[in-house]
Amino acid sequence: MTSSEVRPDGQKSTLATWRTRIIGALAVIAVLIIAYFILAAFIPRWWAQRVAELVSGSFSKGIGGGLVYGLLCTAIPLFLLLAAALIWKRRAGKFIAGAAALLAVIVAIPNLMTLSIVLGGSNAAHAGERILDVDAPAFRGASLVGAIVAVAVFLTVLGLIGRRRWRRRHPGKPAAPTPPAATPQTPTVT
Image (spheres, rainbow, N blue to C red):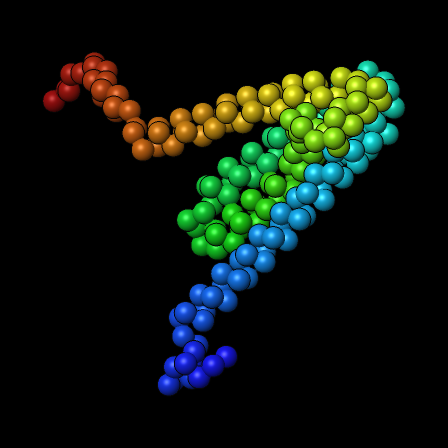
């Protein structure tokens, strides 16, 4: 660091600080790009082989496994993200919401890996498709059905929560009071 980068109070200048931040950000971006290309060549084949070991060529295991992965690995992340959104403004909510969002991404990884096989255009994705076609029949379709069911359940719960909140904020008109029933008067004896 040169003397022109140090202010009289001993702190770094803003130019030096920003230069350091930009260089650090570029290094992180470069590492992420390299990691992406390495993982894009590895993950689809690896995941397809794990699913193939689980299913072992059985249609019933393929359907069952696909439904379980599709349902759970979609519903749990959606509900975790909903919980994160609901507790965001509470005390310590930002930390808990961040942890819930991170956990949601981790739980969604199996669906994301299956999606990388289905939508991927790389050689690894095509190899993964062939592995799933032969050794894990019906897994991809059942996974899609499970994800659709999970989204439908989530939207239903979201609608119920929204309806409940709306009813709390907009209570209905109070019922008109019913007139008291006429009680027969007994004559008083004097």
